[in-house]
Image (cartoon, rainbow, N blue to C red; front, side, top):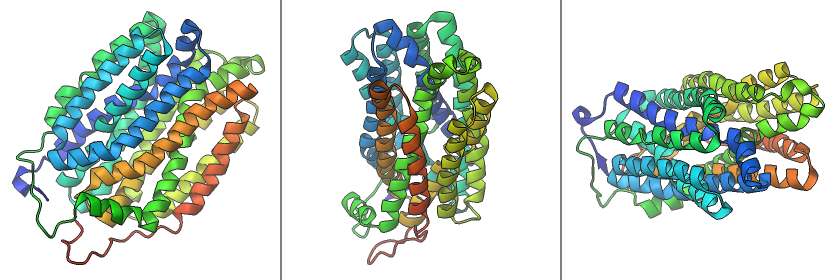
Length: 413
């Protein structure tokens, strides 16, 4: 088991400040990738499907390897994992900047950054948080950390657009690579003092934890709901800017780059309030009901957005409402995982449910580009997003938020 005396725990302030800074950098940088869609594809003569496939693979690799990275962090501590993640993140961004062919671009932006995100985002940071924050404050602290990631999204969108406008897309990516390297010293501030992993015979093994989770119906429903989350948010993040540009022939006022930039920044801004609010409410209201409400509300907001005449104002309202719902699922979903299974294997199990999220992200990113190239419109993908939101509402209602009962095992944390 992971042993850590109370005196050796990281302080609450240290976990929140540096855990928040880690996800601020990792989530903030990736949130602006949609701004590079048109500049990169136009400069290289690629179709949108090429860029979309790279981002889709990035999300799929992130999800596929997250349980492995999480298990390594649970076993050996998060420090080495986060340091390696910071290195890969910087290399991936630099590789995207220097690549002029599809394969190199996909390896850098898809493989390297996908692996980097497994080590620098919520699952590993939440593992540190779960081991160092009491159960009474856990969901609240997760909300604070998610809000920090949301602030990063708000901060980085105008920053990245400014870098693109001033230096060009390739140079902007190089500057972001330098910024990503800051994750390395941040990781050392989250080093858990005297972290050890001692296994006792009565403890649950990794194989037992995986078997227990995969057979748990609430875990299965939670994972499917997370697929919906991934599809919706990544489709919007990657394709909102091109969507607005395409419709500028009908609604000229939405074609300016500042509209898309402002909209993505508003998503990040209101995401702060949504994730923090979810952390607060998740301590008082059943988290499954909050999740169900989030998914249904997203569908309603999307219906209104694509049904009303498009303008900068309707775009900003859409972005603000969607931002409030954007990552509010994260503290709630991870809170349920911790509540059902405990914190011993939290990074791994959070990574496992997150794999479903990233399968949805892959579909949202790739099919957004694929169906646009086939039909010349994003209409079908918007409709899929709406239908998935309704399904997400339905599958979260039956989830049972209670700790599993284990025979001859230590109590759930």
